[in-house]
Structure formats: structure tokens, C-alpha cells
Amino acid sequence: MKLVSACLLGVNCRYNAEEKSNDRVLELQKKELLIPVCPEQLGGLPTPREAAEQKEGRVIGKSGKDYTTEFTKGANEVLKIAKLNNISEAILKQRSPSCGSGKVYDGSFTKTIIEGDGVTSLLLKKHNIKVISEEDL
Image 1 (cartoon, rainbow, N blue to C red):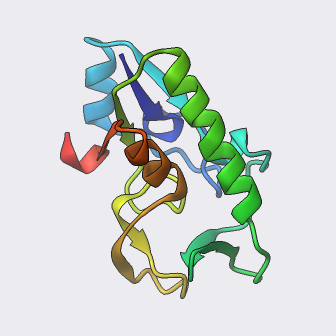
Image 2 (image 1 turned 45 degrees about the vertical axis):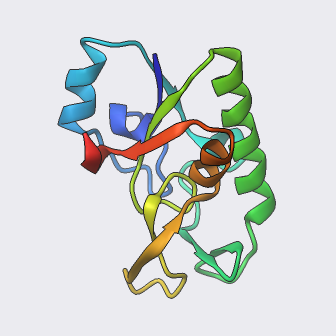
């Protein structure tokens, strides 16, 4: 049993409400129980919502609004789900400010990728939950 970013299973929960299912994740679902989560929705944000990126330890929307509180709340809710289900691994959406594992956007909204982890990915890793991206499958 693993946690997985809900968007990778085709749930329209991304910031822009666009479908983003991943064939490898959909195949894995046929063999293994996957628990879908969307940290941003669990943090209270709607779909669709403003695009956001990490910048200087905060999560900032394209308009300049600070969404760090909502992203942190969502990460904590995902951690609760992981603990309730004895989860040891998660497959999270690469480059997301919530779910990115090893790669995130730099906060300039220019699609520039830097090394780093999303808020949820970082929290799960701190609690010894292995995080991989859909690109690592």
C-alpha cells in the first residue's frame, strides 16, 4: 500500500483542474492498493486555484499571495493519513510545490527547475517515508 498524488490517478485536483494521469501509476494501481491524496485540497485550497511555487522557504502564488499555511496544513493531513495506514512509501507529482521530490520550480514562474522538495514530500521524508516521483517508477 502506497500514498499517491491523486492527480496521477486522473483526479482533477491540480491547480488548473487539468487531467494529469500517469500511465505507470495507473498500471501500478492494478497490482497494488494506492491511497490518493491531494495535499493542496486537504489544506483547504479549491480547484482550480492560483498557481504557486516555493520561494525562500514559503509557498507563494503568482499574485504574490502567501499560501504556506494551507500547504503546511495539507502536508500534515497527508502525514496523518500515512501514519493511520502504516505507509512507508509515496509516489508524488514531480515539481509540485507540495509533492515535488528532488525537483521543484524556483518561484519565478518561468518554469525554471531547481533542486528541492515540496512541502509534503519534505515532511514525509522527515518521518522516514520513502518518496519517489512518477518519473522514478
